Image (cartoon, rainbow, N blue to C red; front, side, top):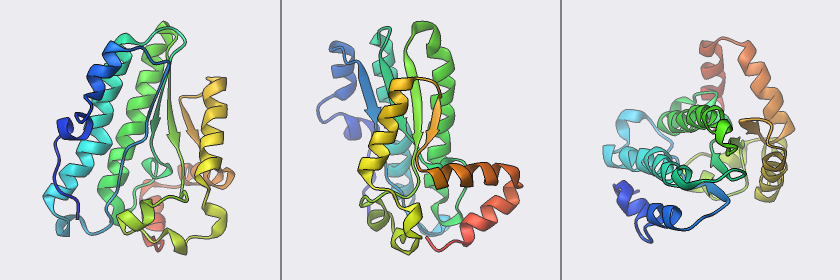
Length: 199
């Protein structure tokens, strides 16, 4: 179980927002986040609020602090998820928080271009981390071709960060193909398909 937390508890241990405004950094990667698998009404409200505090509130607070003092050439990368495009019933709040991250980052990408500050949303699919174990999502049941190493995701992200062309990048060739295919289907069909997968 995850205990409820406040945004200041998430980021206030070393007062990261104050640090970002006091010291210049040419890159900020917002990578903190977690998910909880289950029926919405059966998950404790405190756990849900902890998830939105980390996945949304802390990310917004850190992005705001960073962009207030960002200079031309600086970059902000927000780690979202492939699931930000396709809701999964048993990961409903997680998917929704990542949909926020993707939309928020794309909007910032457009807004910050006039300052020559690059903003990018990174949307990895299943990755070999402890996310599956911590969230209760059985990633080990997914086909191996869908499971990327963390190093592969990082390499892909850094290549696209260097190019500075797109506001949103999806790591993994198969994930990108699936993303295109899902866009061609109705939202109803997409959520039924993804929710029927054994995560």
